[in-house]
Image (cartoon, one colour):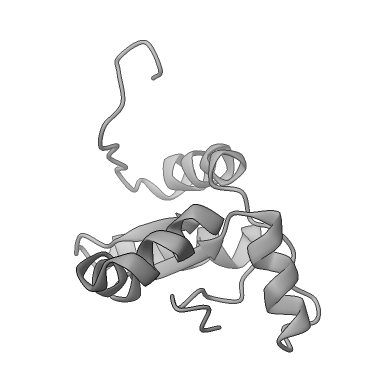
Length: 110
């Protein structure tokens, strides 16, 4: 779905499967949780837009993003909130023996 940014039509289950499968391929991948402010920033900065559009997976983190996707034809699209995705992702990664890494967090958060 193109809102100035490419956002993938996905669900929690599909997003987890995509991330785990690609991680098992052994390459670093970019996953972004797209909210409204990112769409605005992408309109202001071509380089920012390019970074997000190169993501391996861009999930509809914001409710407004999911709503725009439904209006644009992804009728069953719901919000896939990044913080809500993480426990599912970590649980599946542990089951599958896949390592996960976090960028920009404090030890207290972990």
